[in-house]
Length: 295
Ligand code: ASP
Image (cartoon, rainbow, N blue to C red; front, side, top):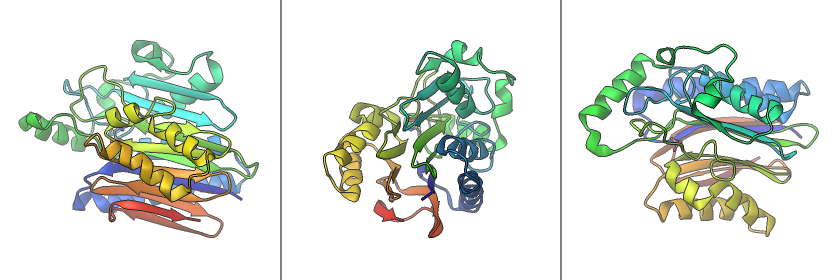
């Protein structure tokens, strides 16, 4: 049994952005699924799906098109974890075109779990100028944010993926520019294993939303632990979101279990996600907040 579920963030997705979002989700999901269908690993599938979204400046807040911080610098966070127990992550990295590949480099080629800032940038094989990550869309967003900076940092359009390969192995990944207008050096939940990203033998999770709340709730690991104690899938997602909502925060998450069940849930206004299994596929940009399961 193979399966993939991806997300393109939770938050407010403008009407005019929904077409590029949907096209981007479809493309990334199918790129990832193709890897699985060809016998590739869950890690290879999520790397393919996430890099596809990082390279898509029309919609997503990751890699090119990542949200700039309040100084106009794009500082990216990313993490990947395999159910085999290996993980890698980078935070506040400014010179990587594909932060998720750098996170995977930390996983396979370093003795560490998380490398940040200049240390992470130094690992990039082909460093790019940070300005190359900025796009007309994100520059406009920064301008609007600066005009109304009383709003505080703002998140959305983070990307994530969870896959199950034909060996029964799960893996999860998340990549983001973080919050628009964040303080320089701020790190969100995405690169923190157990908060925004987690994979174990029984489940993989990727989160999106107000990162501070996901960090404090240790959302992804909490969800995995609840499933292990016998809490039903949709109920576990609901409880995870309740802990975020209890902090007056918003977000969403995707989940894939080792027996091929998929769930998504969010309490933000909109969420973008897509999934594919041998039995079918779907993609959704915006829906009623709540919890759904598929597959
Ligand atoms: N969770 C991300 C962060 O806090 C932002 C998002 O998902 O929109 O950095």
